[in-house]
Length: 368
Image (cartoon, rainbow, N blue to C red; front, side):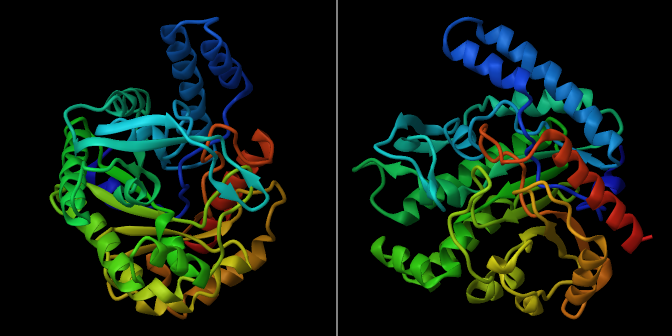
């Protein structure tokens, strides 16, 4: 693997990162929770299943590989809970999605935020050790997810400014630690932007004492400053969606209200964007893309169900997007991961891999 190859990412056929947990892994985690196997036995099964997953990704033609987030219960809480000053706890109720609610877990900030060590550094090291010539992509939640999803205990921080200062410093340190272990392709996942896609979401911001403009400034600052010190040969992309749990979602709405900030104000190298159905609106907000080195990964293939999209229709939508962004700056992926939490979306593993092969084949046809 060369740095030049990494710097070509995101790839024309790419993916968001999480994959359905195999039944063997689900059973092992249940056995561990029931104290029927040890932590070391669970880890060994995780290792074996991740090795199989990496080989499957390679066979489908993907250039970048992830660990599928196989060691995580949640795409965000597991990472955020590993920061200094953050604890896991049982909440009164779960997060509300369309017609369904997650398990009642959460995180709370009980002390000053920071980074001294993080167990996911070892997760990355294992993935890199088995990836061979493939580009290793590691996924972490955005710092904004802590601000919007964590309970902040009274007296820990006197202002948002103080909280963000520590949060950004912690992320800078985590990113450097990942880089030191060989990470060159990092993806930051962030559903918090979707709060600003609808009037209902904007109303929820006001309940927190935030107007839309201030919220966007905070979110952009958290991203830009967290990645500001990354080395030149480390590529950072960001994935934005409207929630994904058991094939459901939290919100709907176009990117329009936040398009100038997302497409013109973030210093990431690429954006993975949900565009798989009418909930995402049109491509018109992409008119605010103002950099020739910003790659837009069109999430036109849904990960929420197994039916394959018509390839010609997907190609037509890619052509439509070129009205706003040149074809060479566009890529293709599923609109989200297949398993943002360990429960996974409602489709089979074979349907999942058919989706990935579909992405690869369409990309080969479009960017030959």
